[in-house]
Amino acid sequence: MIADVLANVFQIAAGLIGAQTPGPTPSAPPIDPAKVSPGILGLISFVVLGLACVLIFFSLRKQLGRVKFDENAEPAGVRRVDTIPVRQPVAPGSDATASNGGTDDPGAGSSPR
Image (cartoon, rainbow, N blue to C red):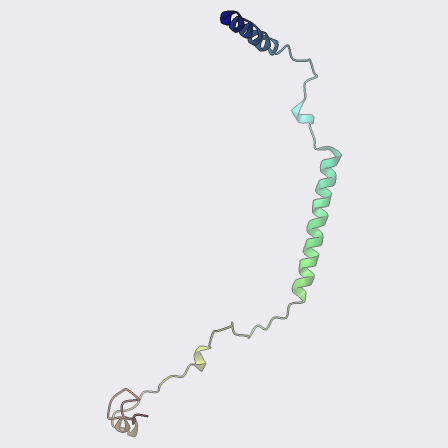
């Protein structure tokens, strides 16, 4: 009994597999690759892309024209080199070296606060 059921299952499976074999392909005219073109839809999309690029160019040009730019302005947080205080060298034996005990440390001769 089980053998008969298995035999029927195998016959049904073989019939399904056999039914799926491909037939001959339908005859269609061959396509010449030299004559394939994008058509009117391709032309329209190309023109729309070109117009969009031109509009974006003019919009960007207008926006950049509105920007106020000072060429002499310093970047934020940057100090110019000529505004940094520089300690001047002191000649030995001058009054500046005598007041701090002859050392190069400016705070050496000062009294504690």
